[in-house]
Length: 137
Image (tube, rainbow, N blue to C red; front, side):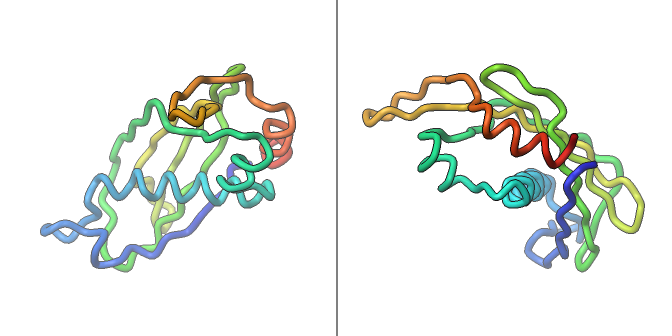
């Protein structure tokens, strides 16, 4: 079962045509990922403190299916679609009033950041994977 987050479209989310400006959908996807983490009792601070990692996006894409406008309620469903050993993919589906607005994904990596800023990937901690799998068995 995907995890849903709801967003009330603000005036500032829209372009001059009055529809959601396309980069905002990437913000809504990221917000849905944050909701997914919170439902698993996680967040980025916990990932850094407990595992010493960040989970940066290395690939993202979206397909826009219909417009959304000011004061629409956009529901974004997030679901882990694939687990690799060092990366995972989150799929998103956004809708308003049952109408599909967009589909998208993010590919994220389990990344250790050294004191000098060097980033290296590492194997995903089993506890992290288990926490998210418990949301979507």
